[in-house]
Every structure is written in structure tokens, then in C-alpha cells.
Length: 352
Ligand SMILES: *Cc1c(COP(=O)(O)O)cnc(C)c1O
Image 1 (cartoon, protein in one colour):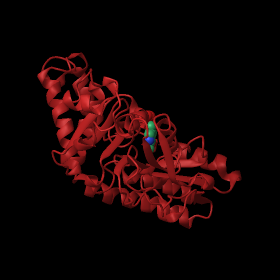
Image 2 (image 1 turned 90 degrees about the vertical axis):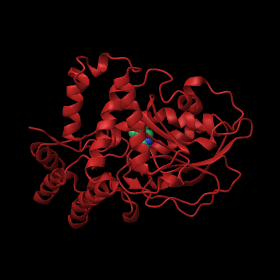
Image 3 (image 1 turned 180 degrees about the vertical axis):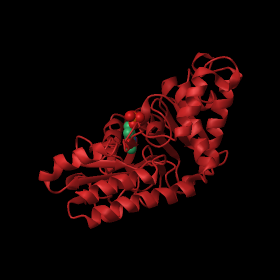
């Protein structure tokens, strides 16, 4: 039986993506070769890369002033690549919003390149809310925020107006809701949360912001170099790029981001309504900052833990344990998770 997969990442993808990517591994496009054994410079794969880059611009409604890259190294590599490419050499200074473990990871790396001012942090309150009321002026090289906090289950519902470049780690909620992508100068996202399998990271960057740091950047870490080589400076992660393309085509063919947002809101409402109704459960965060993607919650009566754990496992649910740093439970409601799976979880919660 196929499980109800609430995993936080790598995570559920559309069934069609599993089927089509399996076919491509056996015989890609009917060419008599596997996707895994052809050159990344072959015409069949170049077409995949071209379309994988083009579909991002269509979905984000961005023009030619932006470039789309598919890179290795995970979102974690971007924690270092962003300051390397954007922080001025010598007297560089950036503003960061500290909203969780991943944001803190980005801050840690940026400090190796220059001054980092944490303009807002909810760390002392266990990251249970998104800080507001901060200003970022033009003395900063850029501002960095994390749109969705995968572990703590909080999400930025709106983005601040800042007087500098806007950089965002959108790893865990990219393409889950309608946002104005043109407000951002650089967006990155590890594919494995909402976009594809592990192994590739999406970077969308406004071309005009590059080349201003005075730093000598190693080629493999230089966005401009990857742009010049059309995301083929070195061998790209061909399979993750292909599976990501299939996932994005699935999204585009099923009503696009707006329709996905509607489905995601319905799923999140179903679960949060039960958490609010059921006195045995509570979230870890304040209501206005609750994430539509990762619902982190706790069971208030520890004596029911065994019963709850065996009930959801018996119902075919997988991946519900909370992150080790927070405990409790986490239901990740990524685009590909059907509402029927959420209903199964809610039924188990009701039965407790
Ligand atoms: C998972 C995650 C990361 C880390 O991604 P890797 O691809 O494993 O490096 C970074 N930021 C956020 C918001 C994440 O959810």
C-alpha cells in the first residue's frame, strides 16, 4: 500500500513524476538510451535544461533581467555562495532575519565574509513567531530572509520593504503560494522540499546585482560563471534536474501556482482546524505565522503518545515525527500531498 507521506524532505512528489522519471531511466525519449547514460551536452539533455530554466521564468513571471540556474551543493551551499557573490570585499555588511535553524545556518556562513547584523530574531522565543518592525537601510549589501521555516512551522506571510537587495531562501515553500517574485533579487531553493528530488538547488538571480563585490570568486562558486555557461559549467545533476522539470510541468498543467495555493490552503485549514478543536493538540507557534507547508504540532497529553503513534502508523501515515530539535510532530503538506492524506491524519486525531 502506498503510504500517506508527510515527510519534510526529501518528500512526496506527484506519482506521475515517479512514473515518467522511471521510464526516462530505462529509455529516455525513446532514444534507446537511459537518461543516466547520455552526455549532459547531448541535444536531448540540453533541451531538458533549457526547458527547466524556461519554466521557472514562466511560473515566476520574470523577464530577461533574471537568470535561472540549477546547481549542486544544496541550499546549504547557497548560505556561502550568497555572501561570496554579494557582500563587498573588505567592508561588506548584510542584514539577516533569524527565524529558525536554516536562517541561523545562513547567518553563520555569512559571518565568514563580513559584518552580519541580525535585524530581527525570534530565537529567544523558540522561533515561535516571525519578527516584524525592523528597518534595513541602504548601507547593507543585501537583506536575507527565509520564507518558510521548515522545522518550526512558521512562514512569512508578507515580505518587508527593504532599501537594499532582497535575498530569500524559499527551499520549503517555493511554488506553494502566489507571491510577487519580482520583489526579490536572488531566490534559492533546494529542490527536495517542494520541487523535485534531492541533489539540485534552484537559484534565480537578477543579473544586474552581480560583479560588484571586488572579490575573486572561485569559478564553481561564481553565479556569473554559471550564467555564462547556461548552468552547464560542470556536469549538472541531470536526474534531479529532469525530475524537477517533470514536477514543475505537473504544476503548470494542474492550474499553476494559484491552484496549488488553493489546495494547500484547504489542506492546512483542515489540519489546523482539528488542532484548534482538539484539546489534546497544539501548535508550537503563534497563529498568524503558521506555515501552510509544515505543520509542527505537539501532543499535550504524553500518556496518549503510544496510542497516537501506533494509530497513525496503522493508518498508513509516514514521516510524521517532528524534527529532533523541536520534538512533537510535523505534518508537511507539500504540493503533491493529497487532501485525502490530511483527512486520514485528522481522523486519527479525532479518534484519540
Ligand atoms: C532543507 C532546508 C535547507 C537545507 O537544504 P539542503 O539542500 O539540505 O542544503 C535550507 N533552507 C531551508 C529553508 C530548508 O528547508
